[in-house]
Length: 176
Image (cartoon, rainbow, N blue to C red):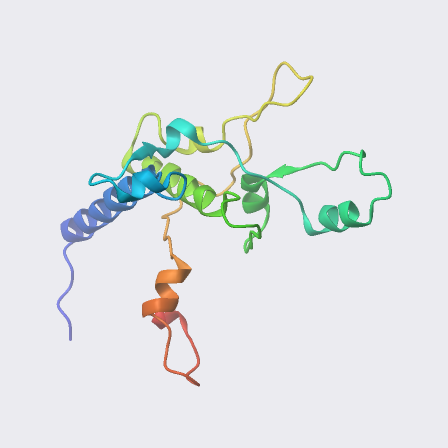
């Protein structure tokens, strides 16, 4: 029978994990933007919270409507990815490389881990800040009904490279 884990150890490990994920999600590499940055000795990085712009998305229905629209000048309403994440327990973001999917996940991770670490500026308040709406002077914060969830970020390319089971073996949560 395994020995019980001390509550102090659990708190210490949780804090270490949150600090690590907070710092790794906060750093935005410029290697994909500037090839010179990737080849330099010290890779150029920005702080994600300093440059993040909300990701706006189309629902599948709006995307279909846009595809079949006879008048391209008709404006299709875009929604924030956070609004979609708040609304759906499971969400798949589709888009071209560089369209902001990973950056959005990193920003959510940054804000949730910042909330759990007690950060004054990088927290759920930053995550839910209002988006500017053309023609409106005052806007309300974006909805987030889930509180301070513990972020677990899984980078699929890393999982595919190291975590997948053997061929013909069914993948389970244990592989994660």
